[in-house]
Length: 471
Image (cartoon, rainbow, N blue to C red; front, side, top):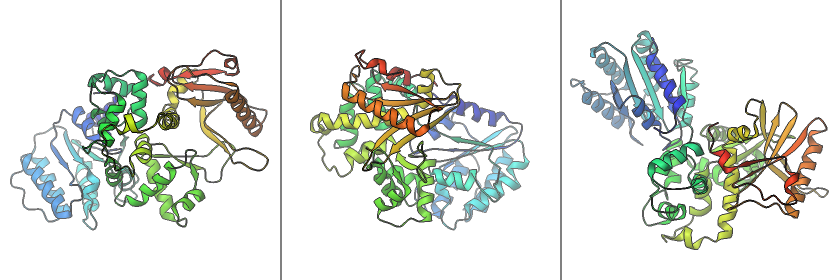
C-alpha cells in the first residue's frame, strides 16, 4: 500500500486497544478510504455493510439485513426500523466467538435518510451496548465529510466525545504519486508527474485511470475529452457525494475558480448574485473541511480573510471541461493552445506549491522553526498598483520567506522586468511589516534558476525535486 503509514498505525492502535473503540474515517470521494480499511484488516470483518447511494430507508434496511445474513445471521427477520437493525447486529455479534470484532459501516451518511431514526439507533447501539464491552471496533466511513464531522466527530448529543480516533484521509503527496506512478508502470519523470498532479491532485483513483504508454496530454484527452465517460462527469459526482444539496457548493467553487487571487466574503456574495446569509458561512466551512478551498487571512489583514479554490481537479475541470461539448479525442494535445496551457500550468503550479509547504520548509532548512503561512494582497488605488504574494513563510526568527513560484520546462531565467517586479513587491511588503522583519526572496521553480545577472538578488531556491521529498 502506498503511503498511509500514520493512518495505518492509528487503525491498528484502535484494534489493539483493550477497550471497544469507535473510529471515524472521512475524506473526499475516490480518496481511498475503503481501500485503506480493507487493506489494514485484510478484507476480513465480523460485519461489513455499505450504504446505498440515494437509497430510501427501506433500501438501506434491506441492504443491512442482507449483510447480516451474508455474515452468518441467517435468522435475521425483515427489518422495519434502525433500532431493530442494530438490535439484530448486537445479537449476531454476541453469537460470535470471543475476541475482537471489527464492524465496518461504509458510506454511513447515506444510511441517515430524512426522518429514518438512524442516528438515534446508532447512539443506542454504541452507548448502551458496544461501549460497555471490550471487544468491538466500530469503523464509520463516508465521503460526505460534513455529515461525518457534524453528526459524529462534533456530535453534541449521545455521541459527544465518543469517537477518539478521527482520521481525515488526505490526498497523496507528490512523493506518494511518484511511487504510485512507478507501481502503475507509467514511466513518467517528475515534470510529467507534477503535470498530472496539477490536473488530478493526489486522488489515487484518478491516477489509477492513467494508461501506461500514453503521455499526460494523451491521458487527459482520454479522461476528459474523449468518447468514454472517464472523468468528464466526475465534478458533479464529487460534489453530490460530499453534500446532499450540491448546487450551492458548485456555484461557490465556480465563483472562486474564476479568481486566481481568491475572494473576500462580500466579493463572493456579489459574484454569486445573492445576499449574504448564514447558509453561505456553513457552506464555506464545509468546503474548507473537505479540503477543496482554503480560507486565509493575508498578512496586513483583510476583514474576514480571503477564500481561494485549491482543489486541482476542480480547477482543471472548471477551466477546460465545463461547457466543452467536444468529443474530440485529441482536444488537449491539438486544440488547446500552448499559451493557454502554460497559463494554466503557472496557476496550477502555485496551487501545487501551497499543498507542499512542509517540503518547502524542509528544503529551506526551517522544518523545526515555528512558521506562520500567509498570503498578501494589496488592492490597486490611484497611488499604488495592485500586488499579491501567494505564499509567505513568516518565521519565529524574524525572517519572512517571500516565495515566488514559477513553472517552466527548463531553468527559469529572471529578466530585468521580472527582477523589478520582485523587488517592488518585496519593498512594498517590507514597508507593511515594518523594520523588525527581514524579507528573503525565495524562488520555487521546476528546474532551478539560470545564473544570470539577477540571480544574486535571490536569497534562496527550491526546486520541483525538493517538493518530492518526504516532509
